[in-house]
Image (cartoon, rainbow, N blue to C red):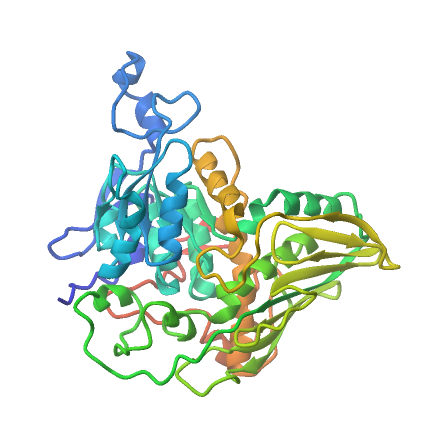
Length: 488
């Protein structure tokens, strides 16, 4: 059944003047309610019940002194990574999964499987627009396809939810800016799933490099990712399976025919829904390079590569070398090989940071080795976790729990986010710019203050996507991103 589309003010309304967006189920059209978003801590403080010392049951509130310390979550997209996220978050203390949201029957079954014996089984809500209206959960975890990441996150935050969103935090550069702007506007916690930012050994390594200067002045970083992905073949147009709501699966993306080689995972390799290996896996190590070097926005971006390994429907590169320059001081390169798993430095993924007094090597997990200018090992820290770059569910094992825990603690005011989208989008922007350079075949020159592409109309056409009519996600012009001043 085809769902009635949203009005063209779908996300624009969600970002206007701190108003709540109401989505009537009958027509899914937005109306603006003139009600301030009130966070739950203020609700408790401002009620006589709280003053009287009465505990409000089944109402999750936050803060060390709150009457309830439980955090209730909803998870969107539970076929693979999302099912893992739901189960993993549920294992954290005082965390409960109240809802799962998906549009495909097998995925829903996967998401429910870990909770077969749970005291409270998650309720299934297929439409994210209905889910965000519910008032009995605190945060939305998003692991849906890439084209849904920013629209779902903004819907969640505009309805008072904190957000944990898998990488990339945006299908294009414009969406990265929008999700960062929404976090600033709504004052909600919004973390991207680049979990290396929470790995304790890497946090210490960054301190050694950036604060103690253990390898001197850092000026170059190299990252890589390798896998052994197979051909996806030539898809056939077939009727949409009865188990899949393909209309809702496509959501804000322009409509394309259903093919038998698209769902579940292969959407990554189609530009209409996915963002290629650069954003899919390159995000992690490219982010680490930027983290260690202390850089923000590039001044020059180049890319070479293509779809070399097979002749099939795969649109994004399977082989790519992207380079990013930051003025005349620092640069980063990333090498991606989706279909040739030969390792670099003995690992399928990792990064190297070069300085004038030494080098730091990471082999894909919470590990590092530092050598001096004579290549003598100065310090080495190993990780017990197994690194498996071919694992689409959790390539870094239980180390992900550091990141999950950090998000929950931030909701409780017990910690600061390790990777807020206001910072994470800068790393994702590098990935997008690499893809744009690849798709246009041109060298990109960028504004060092915000990463915007300069003097290149063809490349700028890829800065933001088109949306399906009625699912308007174009929020350009609503805000002044660099100053944080919102302009209606």
